[in-house]
Each structure stands twice: as C-alpha cells, then as structure tokens.
Amino acid sequence: MTGIMQGKRGLIMGVANNHSIAWGISKALAAQGAELAFTYQGEALGKRVRPLAAEVNSDFVVSCDVEDIASVDATFDAIKERWGSFDFLVHAIGFSDKNELKGLYANTTRENFSRTMVISCFSFTEVAKRAAALMNNGGSMLTLTYNGSQRVIPNYNVMGVAKAALEASVRYLAADYGPNDIRVNAISAGPVRTLAGAGISDARAIYSWNQQNSLLRRTATIEDIGGSAVYLLSDWSRGVTGEIHYVDCGYSMTSMPTLERLRR
Ligand code: NAD
Image (tube, rainbow, N blue to C red; front, side, top):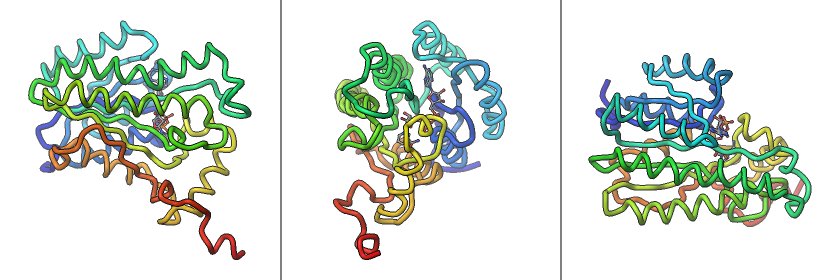
C-alpha cells in the first residue's frame, strides 16, 4: 500500500469501539499506509480493540490506564522494544464523572475536578514526554479537544475547564519539543455520538443544535476528523504546530442561529 503515511509508525490511545473518534483517525491513517499500535483501557475494551486493530493489520495492542503511571511506562517500554523509535501519537482520552456533566459547574467536586484534569489533560503531557523520547527523527502529536474550552456549552462544565488547560498544554508542549522537530497540535471536533459524548447530559439536543446551525448544516463524522488528523500527523503539515484546528463543520464560526430557523 502506498500513501502519505507510508513508512510511519504511530500509537493510538483512546479507541473504545468503532464509534470512537480515535477509530476514525486510525482508519484514515491506515488507509494512507501508517503502521499502528493501540492502547486500550481495561480488558472489557481490549476485547473490542483487538479485532479493530486486526482490521488495520495491527497486532500491537497494549493495556494502558493513564491513571496508572506504571501502565503508561510499560506502554512506551513496549514501543521501544518493538519499534525502537516512532513517528506519531494520537491522544483521544477524556473522562469526567457524568453526574457532574449536568447542572451547575459550580457544584463540581474537588475529587472529580482533579480526576478530570489528570485523565483529560495531564495525561497528554505525561504521554507526550515519553513519546518525544522515542521520536528520534522528529514527529507529530495530536490530541482531541472541544469548543466547550472557549465558550459555555450547557452541561460541559468541568470538561470545558480541562479542555482549556489541554489546549494550553498543546502550546507549551509545542514550544518544548519544537527544537526537536516534534509538532504538537489538537483537533477541536464538533459533537460526535460516542461513549464519552453520551456522558454529557442533553448530548442529543447539543448534537442536533449543531447539526441545524453549523455552516455545513451537519456535524463532523469520525471520517471527517480522520482526514484532518492525517494532515496534522503527516509531512503535509510540517510547518504547523501549537495549533487548535477546528473540525466542526463551521459551527464555531457562527454567532447566531441560522436565519431559516428564526423565520420558522
Ligand atoms: P470514546 O468514549 O470513544 O473515547 C474516549 C476514550 O478515553 C476511551 O477509549 C476510554 O477508554 C479512554 N479513557 C478514559 N479514561 C481513560 C483512562 N483512565 N486511561 C486510558 N484511557 C481512558 O469517546 P470519543 O468521543 O471518541 O473521545 C475521544 C476524545 O475526543 C476525548 O478526549 C473527547 O473529549 C474528545 N472529543 C469528543 C467529542 C464528542 O463529541 N464525542 C468532541 C470533541 C472532542
């Protein structure tokens, strides 16, 4: 197979099932010739991830829970042992207690605030550091964020705060690793129906609001996000780093609902 990712190897963190954004990215990368490794969180998800990995010709599948730093270290040890060095990283990991993804942000507990920040934000810094140490010929890293970092989205609450910190991390990591020709970017995806997405209260209403009011009058698919990820992980974007790239069908460009909706 030939393609823009031919000869490149990368780690995908965050496939839960075939609806995951990370899976859309994996399919697009594999179609362009990339060689992929996957992590999964817990054996129940491992049973789903292994057959998906096989679909893109990968048997390199490792258990990793970012709350357990030993499993993060073991993941990068496994990469070092099998590949020596590698070229790209996809971090598509987020979590918050769904009981706090509704109602007032002010009711966020200290415990869930900390856990949300560690899993959804700090884990990117921890894996980026380990990945950079194995990117001997430069590289590209990508994480996933959402516009709830910049604007108030109903019920997104503490995840919005974590995503704002994640986006700042992208810029600081891009500064840290720029001299090593390692680029760090994020895709800010529009709402997608995934396991994580379903944890947000009223997710369906938010999804259909975006569908009706984005410039393209639809929401982004995991294939749309995959295409943009290939660009950011490939040499086609070699001059791009520290960027938050929106793949949301233009929703974030709007300042009011579409006029046809108001005229109804
Ligand atoms: P998903 O449920 O398919 O993926 C979330 C992943 O996070 C899962 O694979 C889960 O195992 C992993 N995860 C959670 N806690 C973990 C831990 N402690 N250790 C290791 N992995 C852990 O949902 P998704 O929507 O594809 O989410 C991927 C990323 O995209 C997340 O960062 C999410 O915030 C972001 N995002 C999602 C949307 C959306 O609308 N779905 C929009 C913008 C950004």
